[in-house]
Length: 152
Image 1: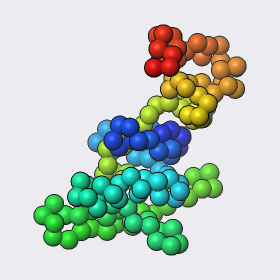
Image 2: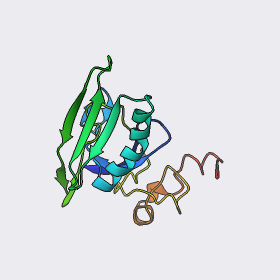
Image 3: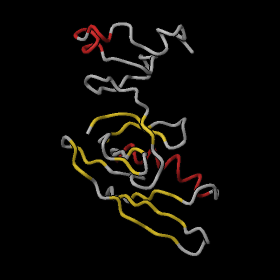
């Protein structure tokens, strides 16, 4: 699995991992840490509570995770436990995998897949410093900088 950032709404991104070859209906199937699942729940659950989404995420005190879907007719709900998978010694959860329309950002380093730090890396077409130094083909490759859109 490789790291990337993922979105289901086009403007809120969450860091996670995925296998680019494992897709559901053309969409990414990402895996997230428990802290990130909590952040996703912070976005999804208010939509559910306001009636704007049939989905919510429940997390208990010991870190078990469920995706809960309200039936379209409003008559009940399904509650599916999301089993963690161990990746590099870290438990990660495929929240919304094989059901939600997750898209990857594609802004990971194309050589080593390290993610940029949005606080210091302004470009979304990014090579990490180590790969940029050792990969001459990466010099100057940025869809923003090379197209004169710095700061856009």
